[in-house]
Picture 1: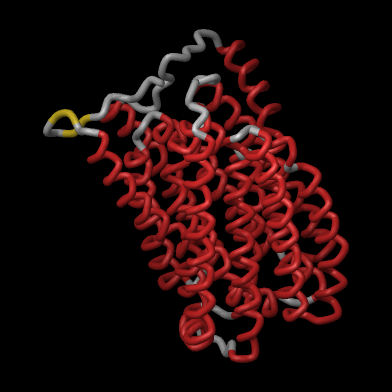
Picture 2: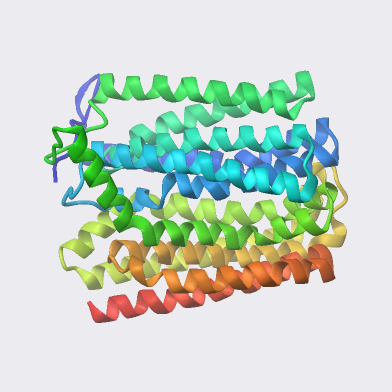
Length: 431
């Protein structure tokens, strides 16, 4: 596999140096990504009211749901494309198509929700702006996927760290100065778009990235054709990731219909650590996806299975540590963080964290199934559990409120993990 030129100001870098840098910067960007929404919501709750916090929680969940349309589940496929079946231009064209679908689909969902639930104009515009904000993330991701595919995860992680850090500072400052979520989010979105353009130009000039490697597509029509093939091949993974996120957020959508924005805020406060578990697990195993794919492609199935088992163990340890921390310190820390009384929701917090561990595990299994190219086996499990979420969440939340939302989340995540664990084990065994 072709690799990008690896250099810095002092000359040639060796693989070990780049790998250490990748882990360092990927950890930094992973932490910022994990705590991005926590920090944004914390600032909001100390400056604005609970209704505004509830709007932010819903907007963030909605935008991240459609972020899965924008990313289309291609990142892991791209990084594990060690034989370069598709070149970068094909990946880019596919991503432009999926981001356009993200915006169209997100706007359609928003229009339907605004009419049926009865959103105010400001709430509608806030959800829309968050959607655009995340669309930039989706477009940026295809460039960073190319960097990682060609051995320069460190480059993408560095610019992502700087972008998120400056974005968070800008957002926090604007919230304090204007006390307007919509205005602050709009300005932050514009800044993010400008930063993305600047970082892409810098990576091209400094490192010659993105690179197409040995696969070159000379004509736009060929790239469009290959992008179509890529989208078709990745559809099972996209459907899986989209439905996974819908399933995870089904309780929030049920709260949006059955309860008010204040209840949405309180559920958001105790649910936020759930995504931290997944993101912390993700930035630990994401750097080794390419090497896991190489193990599989080289027929080293035993090595692959052992390394994958270690990642399962790591996620279990992270989950247990988070649960212990939540039981001892979760309520007082979150209450102080969000300026809210959360003692009545201590059990719900622990229940959600257990579900978060299952979510992280299900995501890891999805990655493994993608690497072994068994992604077509994912669809049935996701469709069945998504239908269960669609039917059960409104009933349970309507009957038991936030308690019901927490328990239905745990049940749905446990079902997904069991399904994908079985599928993954069968794929390894049959290899």
